[in-house]
Image (cartoon, rainbow, N blue to C red):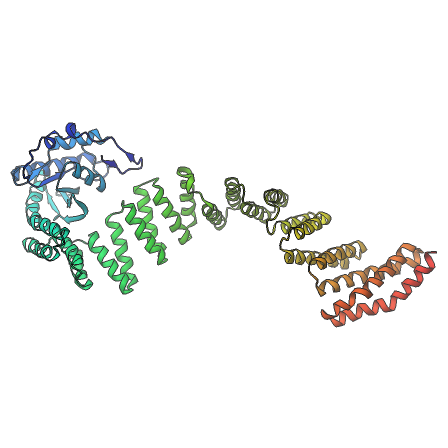
Length: 562
């Protein structure tokens, strides 16, 4: 089966062996000559026919120049039938992995891929010879040009004769190395290089044999560099050099080798994944971004690549690209939308100044994870930041219904009620939170802060009601966590209440005011000693007021309350 690598990625119809390649099926079981396959070449957009015509010219010229007993060129009709039964047209240029699949099916030993272009003088062909057993083994062919397609076909055929001088010895190198005869394999590879001095295939096999023989790594590096001087995109050589530079700590050259490695095979998802992960460890996200963008353009909708891009764009803080990939993930595979997905998407929307979308992410997460209060708390926080206090309060209530013991939720509800000027409800939340052992210290600090706020209001308004509210809040804080600052604040508030009530009680001849004054001076006398550790001078002043005016308040109470 050939699998088309395209935006509409999916398995194609299986090839029927007998119907598709009758010539292959009828082959005699004797020693066969090497088999070579040539499919449609790549060409500029809109010139698909040119690639097909060039491949036909090359295929026919190779068949004319090589007797079948020497080199068997897989016939055009056999390839055409196989391709059409798999949903391809004869003139469709194949992706690398598709070409390999077809070559393996056709029992080709070698196959050719190339790109034909028009020039001012005619045509130019850039091509590679691949070994069907492993398409990481390839040999760049000399670039050929000519006024006619037949001209470049002839030049290609002659160039192929030279390139293939290495093939027999390379094959022997490969077999010997597989049979643990690394030394014999190395010798065969060197024989092949003597036959064709620009041999990449033989040098790659030499690398494999040397590695199996556990030769020094600097020796392998020397061979890899010879290969790269001929073919700068050789994957085996780039893998050796990248490994070498990594071990030596040469980060710059290591990164350069990684980039070249993935450029040599950009549709290989596993390779792209490995390279991107290594670049990520180095925090080289700007280098990784072009690689992942190209991979996504080649294989749109690939879930593995999208997951990788999600990490790369996040690390690079490329928020618009990150959001775009996140949206695509949501469209094609909701299983990838775990808790980290929602949190990172919300973070991206916040960074991209889209607070409404941030809240939307938290709302969706709370729906997907209904037993977790985390998302509801984050949603409520976002709503508060947007000034939507009433909506935030309702969200907090939902979280409370999910888990009444969620840390921090009572404090948030208390704060929301306080902002809506509902102090009784706010205090109720503080008490409820303390009852379930929510973070009591935080509750106490909030209550003390509210007491201080109301005290300041009282100073501005001179209203006893504001001072009374300050005492209520501060006393609540003190019941949760004893604090000398609370004693000071209560004493100060009580002093202001007592003094103002005393000033009004006489003229109004009010028993209630006289009694209030007396009671609050008594409160000051009882509580102010605890405040001395906060501020001796201020505590002394408050004690002085109670000592000086307390008896007067008591005397007035006796007079008016008969």
